Image (cartoon, rainbow, N blue to C red; front, side, top):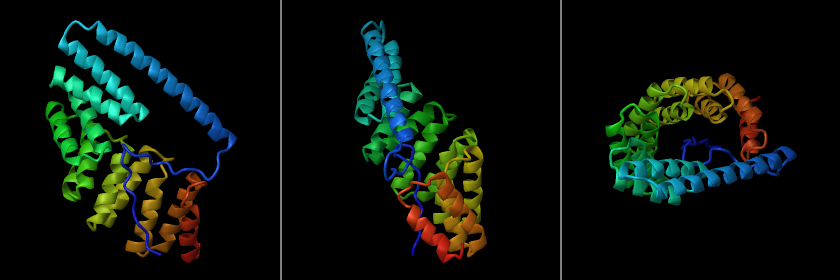
Length: 245
């Protein structure tokens, strides 16, 4: 059975849904609702401050803060509106362009995302998230060499940005550099040992590309250990069984 990679884009959920909810899941839901309510309170407070802002620079800063909270909530249409307004008030705030680019990416408007993220990087070349999201945009456009460059730049600026390491590994494998991909996935799990996706990706490389089942099996098993309720658990178990594990 053919195995494929999944590139973990920060604007999409990387968590697979559980088959059914446990008590812990329900507790997590309650915590999430409380957190969302708190974020809404912060937005309301900031909008009150916005009405009292004395100049465009202050308005842009408040709108950028609002857009960041809206992005945290996953409300990218609202984020796009707030960050777009921030850019109109003050076009020289890197994070405003970053959030606007990220919201365009979430909407599938990849060319506009690229344009905004390039502006953000021009204003602040050291802001790793802009490089990461630009990598995501280039990946969506199948500009793999450019995507790899941005992911690697993001990882160099912020070695703890584990998803940049993972996505770099995906691109390297797509380009035939399987050994380099393994190194990137290993960097991802060094940054975040409970990040499951790189283990699956390493298993696939060892299994399919490097023909090393002895190395593939423990990677698949680690993935299942971290994601016991993942919707692909039966599929990954079948891969392990096919390798004699």
